[in-house]
Length: 80
Image 1 (cartoon, rainbow, N blue to C red):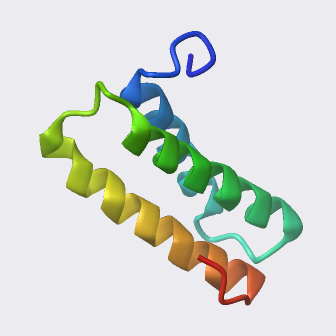
Image 2 (cartoon, helix red, strand yellow):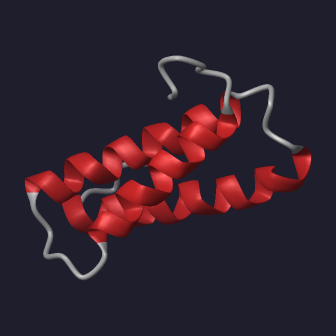
């Protein structure tokens, strides 16, 4: 859906949420790192959407930070 309408914030939001849920209770691995990176990209894409309501921006930023923290734990790097 994000390819069909890149400015639809909910598409990016739902994709990021789904990818993050796939990480729950899983050991760190390359696949988990890739999913976390994809989720990060989805949340960043969400923030770029002109359709994102101001009331949802804080929630998206919070999820993005959670994703970045998870990525740091998975990869063991100081990357942000």
